[in-house]
Amino acid sequence: MPNSLSDRLQMFVRRVTGRGRLTENDIEEMMREVRLSLLEADVNFKIVKQFTANVKEKALGEKILQGLNPGQQVVKIVHDELKRVMGEDSAGLIYANNGMTTIMTIGLQGSGKTTAIGKLGLWIRKKEKKNVMFIAADVYRPAAIDQLVTLGKSLGIHVYEEGLKDARKIVKNGLEYAKANKYDVVIIDTAGRLTIDEDMMQELIDVKKLANPNEVLLTVDAMMGQEAANVAKSFHDQVGATGVILTKMDGDTRGGAALSIREISQIPIKFASNGEKLDQLEQFHPERMASRILGMGDMMTLIEEVTSNIDEDEAKSMMEKMMSDSYNYLDLQKQFKMIKRMGSISKIIGFIPGLGKMKDALSQVDDKQFDRINVIIQSMTEEERKNPKLIDTSSRRRERIAKGAGVQVADVNRLRQSLEQQKQMMKQMSNLDEKQMERMAKNPSAMPIAQPKVKKGKGKNRGGFRF
Image 1: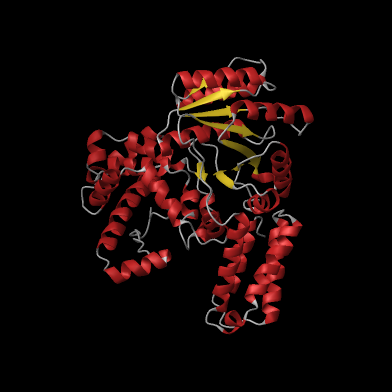
Image 2: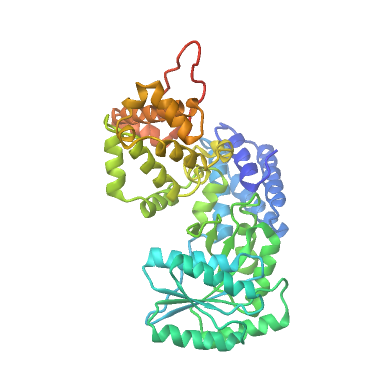
C-alpha cells in the first residue's frame, strides 16, 4: 500500500488521467480519495476540508465535465490548489539594501536547526557569492556550539563563539565583530528547547530586538506533519518569523507539513532540506513541489542542479566523447563523479517527468555501487582505462582486475557492457531528428535504450549495471 502523500496522489492521477468522461459521482469518489490521501499525510483537517471543497467546486463546472480530457483538467485543478495552499509564489531571502544582512534562526531542539544553518550558509555563499559568518548563541545545549564550529570548519565559514555565556552578549559582540571584519551575511543560531517555554521565548525576543534581523527563519521538522504548523504558529505569534526552513523533507510524510504550515501560520516556506549532505538545501517553489507531489517531475530544479554542479564545457566534452569511439573508463569515472555531485539517483529520477514510477525501484539501488565500480576501474592499469579493447580481448586481464578489486569476473563484464551500452545509446540519440527529440521530451519513456548483446550458452551474462 502507498505510504506517503505523493504515492497516494500519484495513484489518483493515474486513475483519473485519460478518462474521456466524468460524472458528478466520479468527482465525489475522487474527492474522497484526495481527502483520505491528505488526512493520512497528517494535513490539518480544516485545510483538507477547504482543499477538497475548492477542488470539487471547480471540477463540477460544465467546462470540465463536458470538455475534452476532463481527467487531466481535474488533475490540473488539484495541482493549482496544492500550489495555492503552499503559497502560490516562491519567497526569496530578504537582504539588507546596504551593509550587512542579519539572519536569525529559531526552532525546537531536534528540528535540525544547526544543520540547516550550515546548509543555508553554504547555499548563500554558493548562490549569492556572499561572505558568511555564524554566531553560536544556542547556549543551553553545549553540543550545539561544538556542532556549529565543526560545520563551520568543514565549510570554511568562520564561527563566532564565546562558550556558554549570556546569549544576548554573544550576539552583541558577534555582530560588532562581523561588522568590523566586513562580513556580508551573519546567521545567528539561537536557543533550541524540547518544548516551547516562556524563558526561551523572552530570550528570542531580546535577541531579535538586539540584532534587528532582516530575516527570522524558523526551522521545522517535516516529519511532524500538522503539528509542525502548530509549532510554527506559536513561534510566529510570539517572536514573529519571516520564513520557514522545512527540514527532513525526504521522509514518507513529504508534503503533509508543507500543506499545513502556510495556511495555519501564514509564514512562507522559503527553503526545504531534503537530505543529510550539506549541499542538499533548495529554495522552496510551491508550483514545483505541487508537481513533484503529483509525480509530474520538476525539470526546472533538475536544470538548476545540473548547471550548479556540472561545468558546461565539461559536459559538452563528455557528450562528444560518448558519441565517439574514444569514450573510455576514465571518462566513465568522470561521469559518475558528475552524477554524485548532484545527489542520489532516486533524487535525480524524481525530477524527471514520467519517471516518478521508477523512483521506488531505484530507491533500492545502492548509491555505493558507484564506489564499487570506481574500485574496479582503479584496479585497471592506466593503459587499460584509456583503451577498453585491451580488457575486451583478454580474459587474463579481466581475472586480474576482478581479483584486484575483490569482485567477480562477472562484475567486470557488467562494467564493460555498461560502457558499451552508453556509447550505443548516445549514437542512437545523435541520429534522432527534431520531431523524435520533441516526442522524447514529452515522453521520456520513449528514450532509446541500447539492448546488450546476450551471449548464448555457458557463462552468458544475465546481469547488467543500470544507471
